[in-house]
Amino acid sequence: ITGSFSGSRPGSMCAAFDAPLAGLAPLTDWSGLKQPCHLDFQQFLESLCVSPLAPPSVIEVARKAYALPYPPHWSEEVDAASGALYFYHELRDESTWQHPLTETYQEVLQQVESLAAEQLRLDQVAARIEQSLTETQARAAADLEQWVGPLEGEEGCEQYFYNSLT
Image 1 (cartoon, one colour):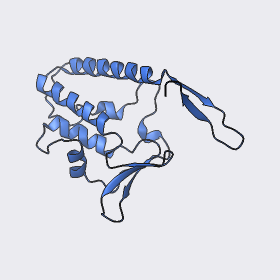
Image 2 (cartoon, rainbow, N blue to C red):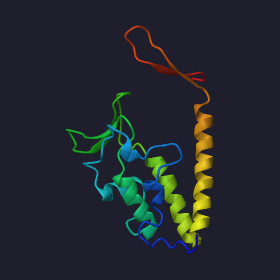
Image 3 (cartoon, rainbow, N blue to C red):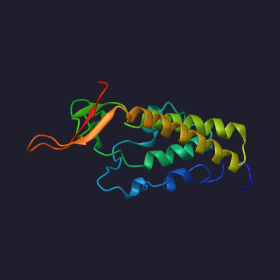
């Protein structure tokens, strides 16, 4: 692959959002995921601490992230009293003011900004992203090691998972 990454070419950093990871279906293929409908792009940028004057590559990837559906069982809701937007996890019956993927998106956007500043070739960008994904996968696998399941619940109960550490 030749060429360098300057962040100004449409689609240059967003291929990762469009192509499935090895063995995983793209988010758009998952049924039942809710799309953002009340959250506007400016609110989204503010929630990620991203300036609208950020490098074009950061804004481009942020737009792709903004268009993605929420993770399973998450939805956006509007507080009746204040009109403020919040996020709700149906299975856990939990609410939060923070987008469920804020930390993930911030990490990705920080990496995009760093890569854009380095003016790397596309093959170098791809190698850095692959390295980052490998490290993230290893952290996730380590976090899941203490979980056991699915286990069968008592009669009439659903399957569940058990954390052996907590």
